[in-house]
Length: 61
Image (cartoon, rainbow, N blue to C red; front, side, top):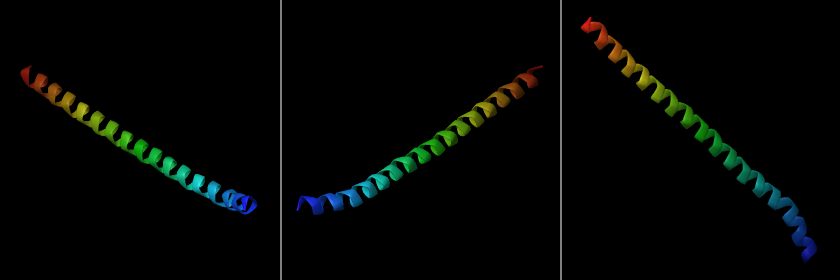
């Protein structure tokens, strides 16, 4: 009985580990993409605000 179980464990557990590892890896990729998008959006809004301030200052002179 234990010998049969160990064969299944040797086949199934690494496959389950690979699937779980892939999901963790995929989540890391998604998190990295979201972080890049949020950083880009933040940078663009900062740049837009700075340009607006610069234009307002240029109109004063």
